[in-house]
Amino acid sequence: MTGFSLNDLERIVAERARSGDADSWTAKLYASGMERAAKKLGEEAVETVIAAVKGDAKELVSESADLLYHLLVVLAVAGVPFSDVLKELERRTAQSGIAEKASRSQG
Ligand SMILES: N=c1c2ncn([C@@H]3O[C@H](COP(=O)(O)OP(=O)(O)OP(=O)(O)O)[C@@H](O)[C@H]3O)c2ncn1[C@@H]1O[C@H](COP(=O)(O)O)[C@@H](O)[C@H]1O
Figure 1 (cartoon, rainbow, N blue to C red):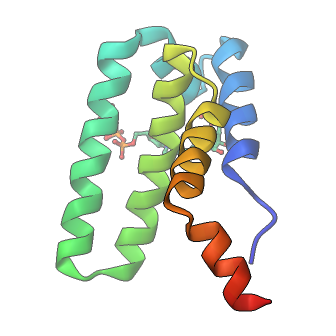
Figure 2: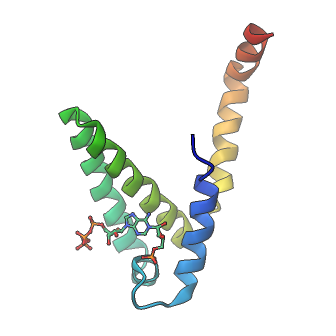
Figure 3: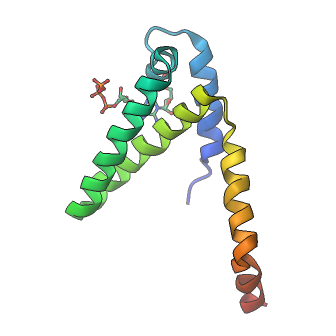
């Protein structure tokens, strides 16, 4: 288990994007705009797929981390809060009734 969450990473991405720090990958990618950020996201998605198909768990963890980080950068460039994505996932879960079924089967 880890206390680190995507909400923490979203905050870091927002801070680094605004920093203008020449050594910051986030600042550079954010400043380069949506086309470049989305292209990087696509590349990381393909690398994640390749790791999954190869069955390489260590590489899958590393590529998944790259993928989630670059997704948060794309959301930041778009001005879409990550909480909107979580709300959409929550809405779908409520719609399917899965959360209710799970809590009923536990209690
Ligand atoms: N999680 C990440 C993270 N994952 C991947 N990357 C960077 O993403 C970049 C792109 O990865 P690639 O393997 O595609 O690198 P590349 O081939 O050199 O890139 P291109 O030539 O294709 O542009 C690399 O420079 C990685 O370091 C990340 N950069 C930053 N973070 C997080 O953002 C925080 C702030 O980082 P900075 O903005 O660099 O200060 C860090 O503390 C981390 O929490």
